[in-house]
Image 1 (cartoon, rainbow, N blue to C red):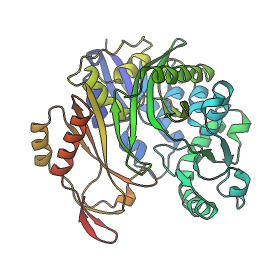
Image 2: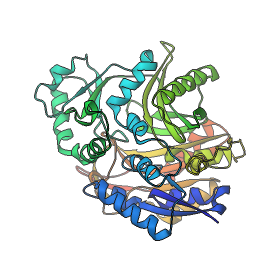
Image 3: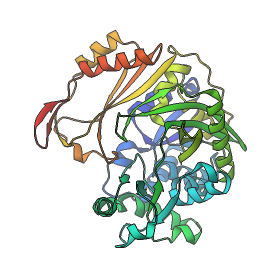
Length: 430
């Protein structure tokens, strides 16, 4: 009989990746929640989500595995469902030790104190918050629970701090309130579930940024991939994710060792994770930014291009209680990247690339995948889950022989894709 696997946040792009897996012939995939049901809502109602998931599982006649490749509430719902139906998965507490940035830093400080920034929790509604943080600028502020750099700001002074906090106060409850509901209703220590502080300040980290992809299975922590996170020039927004990493092997081993120590400390097990790091070459130091209790679906296509299979296979094996298979280099390319085509001004989308434009590019660039993230008539300010400094128009997935060819192919794509945006001050082509 086929395994019944439920996906929290099922979308067309990742459904294809799942269906391309060799293991897919033995699985049926169901939407525990569709991406539209989970993301495009005014309020994140955890109780309603759980009731709907329960209803779908019962209608299906059972469940063998539960997965999500999206952040909150997807990652947090997974261990709740796994525990209720007694299927493989890590504990809710271990996930919350990843998701709650303050709690996570406290746990990290127990095992890797020299590899994390200075940090301080604070209440954005406190009129004296800047003074109480007691850190020298520049530093970053972000919600204790957030994702994709939502409401994250680099702070250079007091005036800028309070200006940014006005924006934080308008939007922070969208995620913080439902997240705190889970914290309060699941026997989490009061020092975290009852805290008034909903934001964290962290000293700035610099250097080569990368992301570890790994998993823990029956207490054995495995790192199987390192992806370079390359930022836009002179900006904090990501320009592309490139794989495999260009970092020296010795540095990669140091990063993997730190990742293993943290995952062991928080007792995160039988589940995948990714961790973001900085390597500061000048100081020859490695610093950890954050943990995500999931695979990064942004990396799935580039893993497929290198290994011949996406790391959805790792996620699926763990969800079914099986040891993941080693990813082999059986793909068509030596290098692969997920380029994020961005604009840094807000405005209304007048025109997006046609399917003909995309098809022409695919004809000349083998393996090319393009994911358009905006629609004609949409205002960029209405896009959900963007970082605080840009708007992501499209993802362009490219494979190549080397980095130079990657960039050349990307430039060819930018020239061949026509976005027209009526910016808030003027109309121009991107």
